[in-house]
Amino acid sequence: MTMTYSIGELAKEFDITNRAIRFYEDMGLLHPKRLGPGGRSRIYNARDRIRLKLTLRAKRLGFTLTEAKEIIDVYDGPRDTGAQLSKFLDVLSRHQGQLEGRMADLQSNLDEIKQHKKETRALLLKIKKIKNK
Image 1 (cartoon, helix red, strand yellow):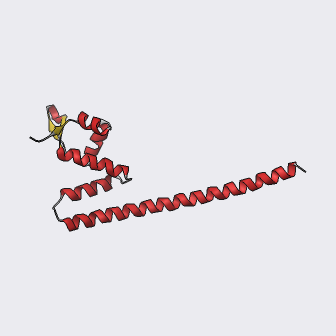
Image 2: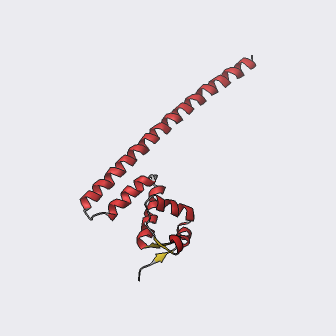
Image 3: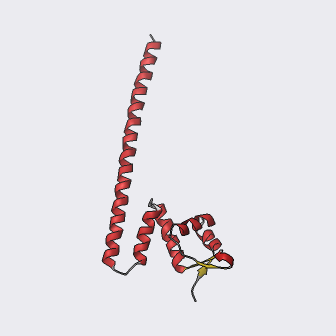
């Protein structure tokens, strides 16, 4: 028997909103079966549940949804392990470069703040000396 899930069940399990799940569907990350009048009811299978879990994990790691989709789609494609691993490595390398760039920017900002604090302390000390004369 194949496990199926409603949008509400997945939302509750992963502590996200129905709207977030619909957004992931719009992004092509999930592909539920549509039932009922006008296809309004969504039925998710185990594959969708796993894709949602992987999407949320990728988000926690700082990947964009596009990057998450790239990674997940590779594993849904042909089972050429070498190609899958190469693609995964490319995405990881690109993400690592972005994070290292952000870290460099943050370090630069911290260095600038430290310099401003040093200059401000020196000015305060100078003002105190003038007042004590």
